[in-house]
Amino acid sequence: MSNYKIKQIWESSYEDYCASHHYQSEVQAQASHAILNCKSGKLGCNISQCSDCGHMEIHHNSCRNRNCPNCQAVLKEIWVDKRRAEVIDSPYFHVVFTLPHELNPLIYCNQELLYGLLHRCSAETLLELSKDKKYLGATPGIIQVLHTWNQELDYHVHMHCIVSGGGLTVDQKLRKSKNKFFIPVKVLRDKFKGKYLALLETYHRSGKLSFSSSCEKLQNSYHWKEWKNHLYEKDWCPYIKETFNGFGNAIEYLGKYTHKIAISNSRILSATPTETTFSARGKRPDEPNREIILQNTEFIRRFLMHVLPSGFQKIRYYGFLNNRMKTQNLKIIFKLQGCQRFKRRYIGLSMTELLKAVWNFDICLCPECGCRSMKQLGRNYAASW
Image 1 (cartoon, helix red, strand yellow):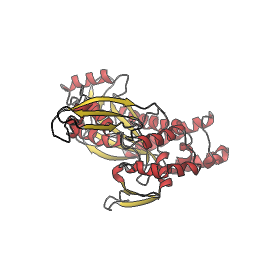
Image 2 (cartoon, rainbow, N blue to C red):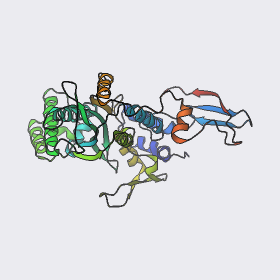
Image 3 (cartoon, rainbow, N blue to C red):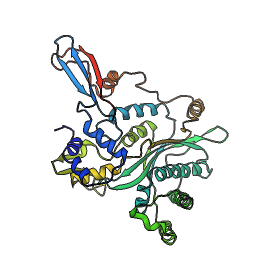
Image 4 (tube, helix red, strand yellow):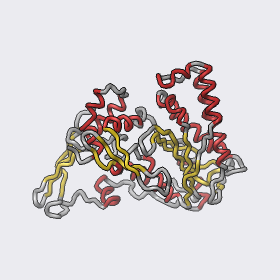
């Protein structure tokens, strides 16, 4: 049995989950296959040997699937390091846009379309209001990360946004806010809600939406109008989660969100052949962590709900960080500021050097004799599934 608890759950109960005839998309089945085979030897291995004492080590390859909790640490560190070079001298803010749960059935059967709509509406709301001279009067840099879960692994669609409190004006000057978020939350809320529902109505009229059995009544025009009016009446409340005095702190903080998946191995407290126990934060900030117990098949069902459509970009960049103009915009900003605050630390490092720099783990060190003499003999790979 694997040492990785997430893998233990799949080894114990994935066959039962499949036998219960739960629907799985191709990308969900691929994620399950990756978790089952990660670091098992079925995906190939690396072989190294100590040239001093002859000790041999075999390291099984990881799956590198973005849904596997065993494979995100290195990717996260590389991503965070790339973002360091995009730091500007301004405060930064963490804004969260959350969609009402009444939208869940429709979103789940239109994932690519409506997750993309959430990205679009979040970015347009922030950019349009930021350009207003009442608020910032400039175009900030925005990094957005889509999450679809809460602490219990239920379906909870929301967008994390790191927003710079400074940006470029139309005439290419730099403007900065004070250490306080520059857009009133009520203004943010109304703009976002209006955008999302207006574009959702456009999709409905153009026939782009699919309707599963859980939301099939919305195909009726009367029910659709009644449902949409109810959503307009609800209080869509975005909130400012954190304010950072320096982007260095903000990027380290955002690193917790970018390559995070629905649950990490560290949160799984125990996994028996039938049940999984995992920790969840208290429902209020002053409450202790809770323990959640689920049948393994239910745990798998909840986990797979959060596997994104194939190729979907859950991290996106807007404002002066948009991919097409980012390099040019940053050159202008750094020139106006007189310097570039941070440089990348790990550029050009091999994987061996990266492991040593970040985790102080030396793969060249022989665990048997202690000499730094481990040499790679070779590697092999499994055929792709």
